[in-house]
Length: 59
Image: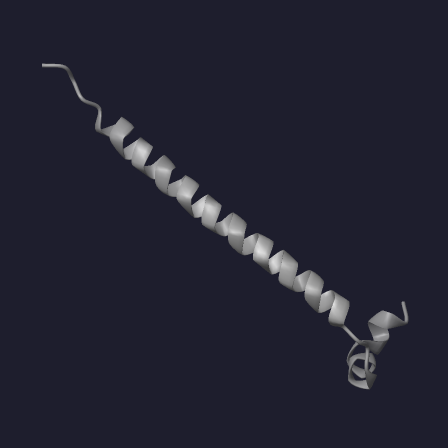
């Protein structure tokens, strides 16, 4: 009877799950980047922003 390695089966499952998770995260990151670009385009500096970040904006 040939020896069956449980590590290869578990390793393959782990690799498959990793790739699935990686693909899901890639989509989430792309979405966040898109949303942040949209927010940056819509950003308008107002008095409150100047009050909060005045020390940073002056430098």
